[in-house]
Amino acid sequence: MANFIVKNIPNTITSCNLFCGCIAAYQAFQGNYQLALTFIVAGAVFDFFDGMTARLLHVSSPIGKELDSLADDITFGLAPAAIVFSLFKEVHYPTFMESAKAFMPYTAFLIAVFSGLRLAKFNIDTRQTSSFIGMPTPANALFWGSLVVGMHDFLISENFNAAYLLIMVVVMSLLLVAELPMFSLKFKNLSWNSNKVSYIFLIVCIPLFILFKLSGFAAVIVWYILLSVITNRKS
Figure (cartoon, rainbow, N blue to C red):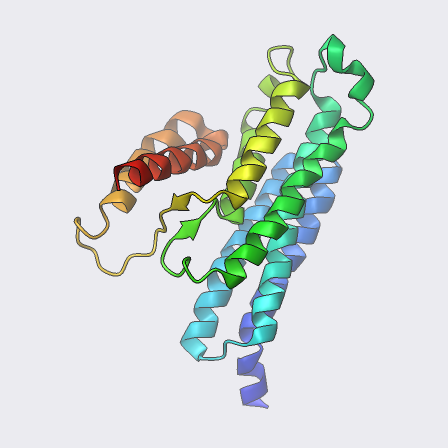
């Protein structure tokens, strides 16, 4: 009995991630962006601990891997897509896009589709053991949630419009599956030389959170992408 409980601890944590993702998606469809972001963050916490727990308890399993991908696509794929779907209904539409206003929100689901593709690629890509190829789905979800919560008034003003939002959806979706190496924050040791990129990233994150406040996660994700591109070009 005890062994059965131990074996299922990681899957239970993963299921909590999935549960948070479902709530986040529902709240997003209702336009409750802050609650949606809160549950995305909670899902990210569970996502961090399920793998760690499986390794500590030595109970990794094929079903855990499949469940993890499903949970991630809901929490970090569908939930941010639902946020953008609702935002498309509020955003300003320029005259030339008025005829597309009824179906434009559905383009937000590209985020969920490309998140699914990214997770499937990750599961079979042996190159991503210590770093990433393409943007991780949690980073993309935190970007959208933080951006919409922190800059909502600007995003629905006439200074921003649906065309810009569509471009952002396409760019961020493509980044999920792009053949772009992105560094991981996994520390094998604490030395500067071994973790220079990670340390630089974390140091710059502090003023970004102070400056951008609620949209700090969005600013940090943009910084993460830029630093990955710069690092890749130098190598």
